[in-house]
Length: 187
Image (tube, rainbow, N blue to C red):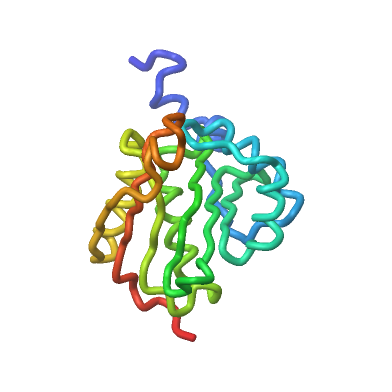
């Protein structure tokens, strides 16, 4: 005998099913008007360091080609900021990865990294770099999985040290290098 309200019965209710199915993500370059919502998303994603809204506005306008927004239902649910360092244009530096709580566990961060690789702005990149604090398990999992998925190596070394660069106020940031990147884009 079925008990009203159990999972099997709810799965047959089309209205309920529509509310439980999640729409797909749309990936795009950010726009200046995304700066404030992105700042709010980052603030909701500890242990990420928050930036000024102005910084996020600049990322969304001046670095739009090297950043990605993931939207679902008109809401920003994911964000990656990145750039190609002028002194090392073969590198893709990932600054921040933020995923809303409502989108976690869906592989969104990895899909956003893959989205960046196929963009013309990253033609000719051979290495992805980022910095991660030792205790940021989610980022270590993300970048480790990315390297494995693309058959690349992953190395780490201190880049900005707690006492030398942060005056003891922030944990050491380890530079992660992932190479070689897949030859997805050519000039």
